[in-house]
Length: 311
Length: 173
Image (tube, rainbow over all chains, first blue to last red; front, top):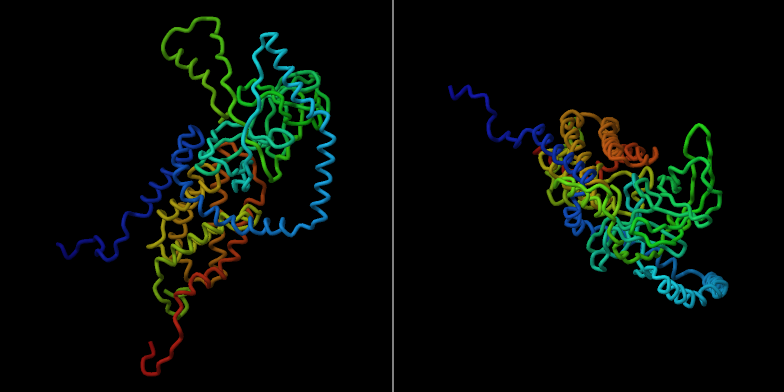
């Protein structure tokens, strides 16, 4: 009977059936996708793999960096002198404002103390260089050259010389990822400077922002400046975010469609400032009706702890 | 192994380190700052597809999965997005490899094209389900370029396996 055995001879062995391996790998990949998209559990795995891919990325970006540095070196003296002149001008123009700023801040602090209002937290942070855009075409993110080594943590705001650029969303040992304010998932609580109206501005993904859920008769005008309101406990209040570009008021919708453009050079490369984390805001007051039962209390506690960014 | 099964040229066996080297170089090419321009091929997918067609016993879904994870981390995309696409690509390439090598190179490229289209299509589907923004039609352009590169790529990656043509009158083979 052994002569009619139908199993193939051992030298044609291919290991497990390809279809079984495919099922296994697809199952693992799909569960990774779900874990990452829904629960954000995989930051540790990302950091471990990042240690391997980081040197390769550095190597890949070395030629481009070299070319740009050589370009800067050969930039003509003319252009540099021109830029120098312009910067001196700008400094002089701003001088009246900046010179009095220290005195005004001191006065503000004194007045706030007199009124027994909590003092404003001074802004501090560290300068970081934007290394490259993340290759992922589905989101708007950049990578900056400061990471865990420089005590960067997820959730820190990132600004440039004109306003808010984005927020740190992932931190690796040597670099960190900044989600730009124009990303589709990014939302920032803002306030209109002209009348103090509060709202939330959302990224649109095409380089613009939208002020959503504003009633059609809201007092918003083209050219209005939006600054951070600081209600989220993450961004310090008063940083410029966007300017209102145009407003469509359609009576068939209850909300106006308000399109804004970012003030900061969000899509430009250059240096940015990663602001230090804000002091924790005071705890929220308890809701009016007392909650009893362990699971509900747990839910209320979980609500108080804010995630650094909306998933 | 021959360039195609219908050619009479006999190739040397492939060296494993050369496969590894070509895949690492492809990974490096994918990380270049130019890699996100529309139409620039996903080199890892292309080289992986090549080796999965020619050497499906040596390069398979395990390599595809690992390279996919590396690309996910380097791209800052969703974990598993590249891995899923590459694994399916490697499986598809291995499944058609016995048939595809009977065709001349240009027709091979034509048959590889739908396999390569699988990669952006799967990534697009996964990201849309997770709520990403539409990346533009340029995102789907690279398989066309990659299919055009199939012929030069075949010659380049098979270079170390060619042997010098020595005619011996007494021993014809």
